[in-house]
Every structure is written in C-alpha cells, then in structure tokens.
Length: 184
Image (cartoon, rainbow, N blue to C red; front, side, top):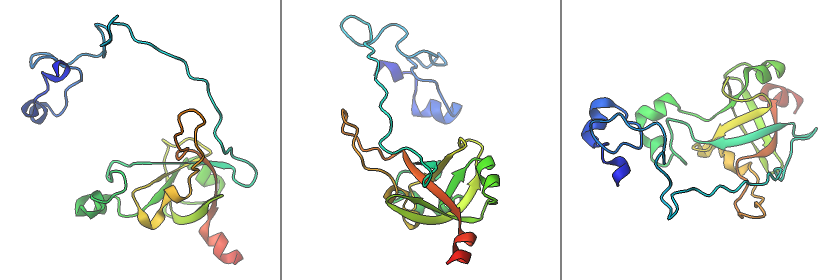
C-alpha cells in the first residue's frame, strides 16, 4: 500500500512509532489522512450526518449510573491469551471497576474496596479503582475477566437501523459491598 511504504518493521524498531500515512522512509509521516483527496472517483468524501437516537436504557432512580465496558492496555479483548501472559497478568491480575474519584468519595468507597455493580440483567462484585479519566456518573469495567463477566450486565437491545447490540451503555447501580453484607 502506498500509504505505508515508508513504515518498515526496521523503522518501527528504530523509531518506536511512525505517523500514518507515510509514503517514504525519508518523511516523518503526514498529519492529515486523505490530504490529497479520498480514494473515490471524484476524490471527494461523502459525509452523511447521523440522527442521534437515545440509548435503549437510561439511568433512573433505581439504576442511577451508566455502565460501559471495554478493553484495557494489558488485556486484549476476552483475555484468552493475554491473561495467560504472566507479565501482563501481574500488572492487571483482577477485574476492577473504574470510577470517577468524586463518585467514590460520595459513596464513601476507597480504591480497593469491593463493590457490587448491578444492572437489570445481573450483578458482579469486584474492587473499585479511582480513575480521573472516567466521567462522573459512569463506571467502566474491562471485559477481559471471566470471574467478573461485565458483558453479562450489558444491554443486548438492537439499534433499530444498524442492528448492532447496545453492549456499551446501560443503567447500573453501585453499592459498597461491606454495606450489602452488613444488611444481609
């Protein structure tokens, strides 16, 4: 591909990173993709605005937070391979829920305390971690940990047009586990 001619394996080893696209070894890479036009007959791109459709499930009084799931750097996808890598599993050995420090303070939860994350589909228990990269009102859980299977909590409602499941957004509630155990 012309757009990667300047990105050889040797160059990546030598420089650690090269900006894409990069057509030759003697250039640093281009800051704009498709700067000379799009690969279409007219050279122009076609942009179509998408109408915003609200999520199927919104936070409410019973489930006031938003749950989203995803990957973390150390464990790819389901962790089927990366969880067997001792170095990676030493860095991130267990599932944690990432929450805004403000939310943890309001719940009187310290990093490392165990919480129960519940949705209308079930609940999992795991440690909490303060993460300033997570917006207040949101909890992020990596889905690479079978012992805290976050994707079992998500909403499988289908987008009416794309027919894509809504796995990345659902209403959730978080409870400090010591308070739950004391109440039971």
